[in-house]
Length: 204
Image 1 (cartoon, rainbow, N blue to C red):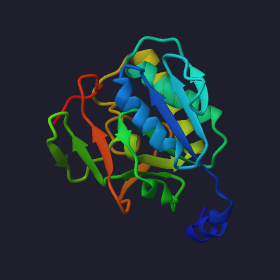
Image 2: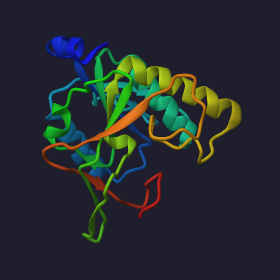
Image 3: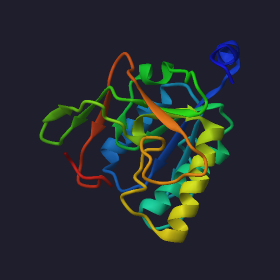
């Protein structure tokens, strides 16, 4: 679709939150993040490794924690959502409401909110330039479903390696059948990425 057509359809596009967790996080942090997401007012589809019946439309996936499991959680939540535009949200990020003001101008591009502070448990905070991470990803749900179906299929057949990475549309190391690019965007106020001893990816 052209930018003009997308602009005309903006008022009809629905938004939703895709939330996924391995249920390993300290509950004090987890409950704060969930409480904050509920205040946003968007429908939430959550995919978890333990039942979470009180947090959005919950999909319980009884698998072991790992990269493939995370991709399956993301795909399951995407398929269960009915929103046109989705924001992928993680269990250890405090999201400011301005994060959700965005409407992607292109369907074949995935957008990353790079306005994020990484906060360590000792109070040290780091702002990283060009910080593209899945916790800041926004895009059109149908396109994200296509990508994650392909991602799950590849990892199931070949296993995970660093060439695959985590952030859709950010590199050309894999010859994806469905090709997407990515762009940065900046919310008015930053998100807070809480670093802790259960992060799936290492601290910088």
